[in-house]
Image 1 (tube, rainbow, N blue to C red):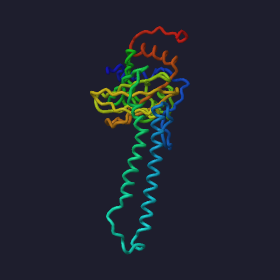
Image 2: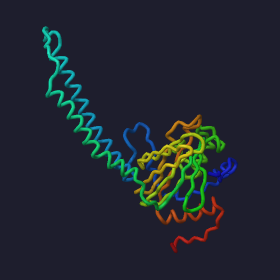
Image 3: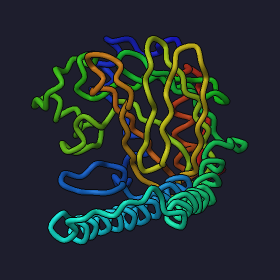
Image 4: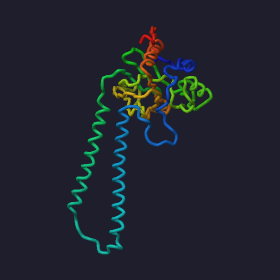
Length: 293
């Protein structure tokens, strides 16, 4: 994708970054120090994946406890002290049938739930919004395919924006000016992906140089960005807010500094942002009246 923001342009953009759809949005999809488990699910895809993970964890735990108890019982019951004369046999048909049939039943049971979840994730529905995400070393480029504009998205404080990957006073000031908190350092970007709530979003993912990966944990989506290939993922965000993700494929020295920021807003706020974004990134003057839409 042709870069619509030069490095020098990014520096000035940080100083005057518009808080499009920023005010009043709750930060939902953010990692929390010391927390365990998943981020709150914001899509049906994420909810189904998290339920499947919990169900499989229960099965694995039961199997682990059973095997551990069985091994302990065998060690105690059949040790050399209690059995100076070991039994001599070659097989036990009922046990062999059981250890063959029971795993098959367990796998079929898991498959009965995992395959529908996989199909739900992989069958791409008709999109309300289509976005092409291209991974670069080390930032993301986005194109709103049906709207005729695109932009590049850099981490606030990344080297490309004049930072040094540390939370300096200048970087903290840039975060605050863009509407973020200092806790959002390494997560917030100068330009965020903005999408409407409760609309089907299809993201076309590719890479421009090496393999990257586009991920939003709260949405339950992750897709490798492979140069020369165009993959797709989809989601329908159910709650307005700000969600963060990261490149999830080791892609070079600055891999840790190419985050993803997605803002889920109301349809009215999205329409207003779309008009401003077209004027900003595509150079197309927009005549837009929120009240009339």
